[in-house]
Image 1 (cartoon, rainbow, N blue to C red):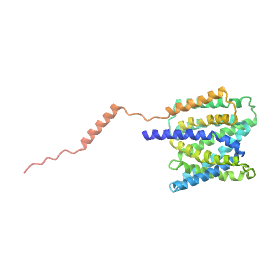
Image 2 (image 1 turned 60 degrees about the vertical axis):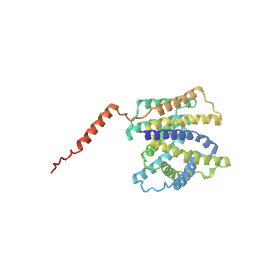
Image 3 (image 1 turned 90 degrees about the vertical axis):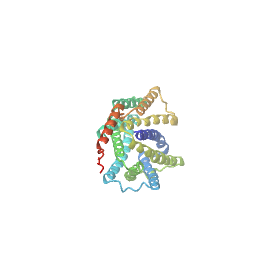
Image 4 (image 1 turned 135 degrees about the vertical axis):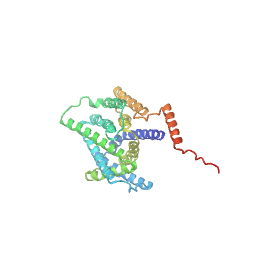
Length: 326
């Protein structure tokens, strides 16, 4: 019980740091001057190579224990990851970043559903309410971008792409959690390898980074936002219940808004600050008390059971054999 709690605490810290790292990637995408698909290619190439070297140095590439079904799941999760990137970028293009962000952040609700349906976890009413509170905070954060949005066919297409991206990444999370017995570093490496194969044919090699700053941003996205970030997030996926993964996923939009404010001076209004506070409140409340807790044994019942066990042991001892002296 104590070891399980310790693993969850470590997993929560990994998830928070990983989501915070993810919230800053938008800045480096802009500074790199690369289109979204080029960004994906560089992340897969640089992040995948870093993971390959790391796994080789650590001896993690001995994969004889990986079953055929696990190899299939690794390949499928890699495809889902790339399709998630493509769908999310398409939603930003058609419906705008604000709308895309709100709809994409329905992803934690899919994870809440997956908890009891796939993993047999108990999802409490408190966790559902906290997820709703955090999602409401996301709506308030992007509220300025939502005002005055014209609903047309392109908007509906963008909304559909964002919802598809949320479902695809939920699939990645679920598969990663089910790949027990495989190091998260290996899982991420295989997924990025599949992504590299998919993105190489559409890589715009005529739009390579032009300045040293742009190259630096590309390297940072590959090492910091891919290699290190996926190790942290995937380690958290394998140790946390779905309820906590769902709530802690909302760290991402908080950091994204704050990073946007400090990097580009985009004003953060009162409603947005309220949204940030709502997400933080949900995250703290969920971290303090969420998920199914192991029932504590009743002391009287425990003493009774120990007494019964002692009597049973005594009953099993054969009586001494009496012998008559000659």
